[in-house]
Image (cartoon, rainbow over all chains, first blue to last red):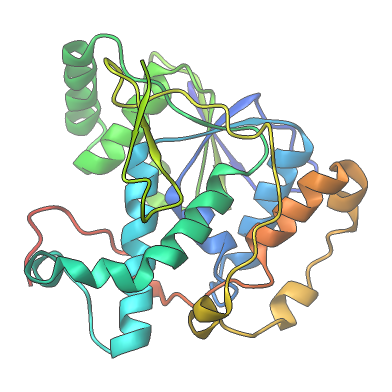
Length: 178
Length: 96
């Protein structure tokens, strides 16, 4: 079976390259999250085993949005959405320092890398489309998975249930669930 | 040739490498502790119980001191409160 799902255990031995989903980053930064302890233990284990951790601009995009929404709600009591931000883009200025702090902390995690540009972008898009259609994932999740495969990353760390029923007949991937 | 932009007001200047919108970057070479400013603290929740309850001994004994400092800095001390409904990611065409 090409897809292996491994629930967090302190005895887990990880493959040497793992794509880090945005939920792992956010849950490690959120002590009120139900998954806080598990996320911290998983990230700590990955670092201890010197695993190469990969993120993409998609991950950063998601982290920024989640943080902006949380901070905006905390400051104003209101929900932030794309329309509000488009109408008043200066909102970001309130949070630029915070974004810088958190982003820098992410980028300074040990052994963390940003995935490279895809050499053949057209083939990559077709591959992601196949994942989107065959695996019946959302487009954004399909791109996360497509980047993982395109860069031959062997593991995927997430708490997202979207990855529970993957098939990927031609690729060996271990999904580390927490 | 590398070039930077937006480095007057943002300390995190972006690096643009022609031909590669997403550049490979090794960013773990120099890891240092980063502290949030007092101005930021209003957004960070002082709630140490769950952080204090973590058993990080095994991590401390395995990681280098600097790695452990960076790890602790990331997972606690100044973490912020995010509600579960904030986790939904917006797509560009999301309108409410």
